[in-house]
Every structure is written in structure tokens, then in C-alpha cells.
Figure 1 (cartoon, helix red, strand yellow):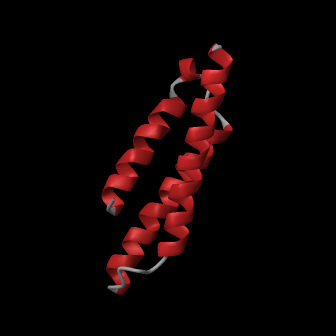
Figure 2 (cartoon, rainbow, N blue to C red):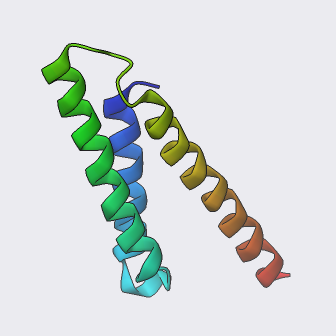
Length: 82
């Protein structure tokens, strides 16, 4: 998955967390805003330094942490509906 797709996916998630009816706004939404800003900054730095691997570990950490968090939230929602 390239960086643009990752940003689009996180932005869609952010929309979910900004939706007041989702009950997920607040801390999670703020964290996503912050992490999207970091990813965008890394992308600009890669272009500026002409280094496609610049900040790759940080980027991967952010993406995987958010994916794991979403999986846990889906499990919580599923358990809550039982």
C-alpha cells in the first residue's frame, strides 16, 4: 500500500471518529489528526531529501498501531452487540 492510500485510509477513519454519532470522537480523533500530520510531514521530507525510505519505520509503526486499534474496536463492538 503506497503512502497516498495509507493517508486516504486514515483520513476516512478520521471521518468516522469525527462523527459525533459514532461515539468515537475525542482522544482517538485527536490522535488520528496528529498521526496523519506526521505521515504527511514524512512524505514531504521524503520528497525534499529524495529518500524513499526516510521515516519508513515511524510510518509503519503508525499504520500498524492504528490498524490494530481498529481491529480491537471492532471486536469490542461485536462483543457489545452480543
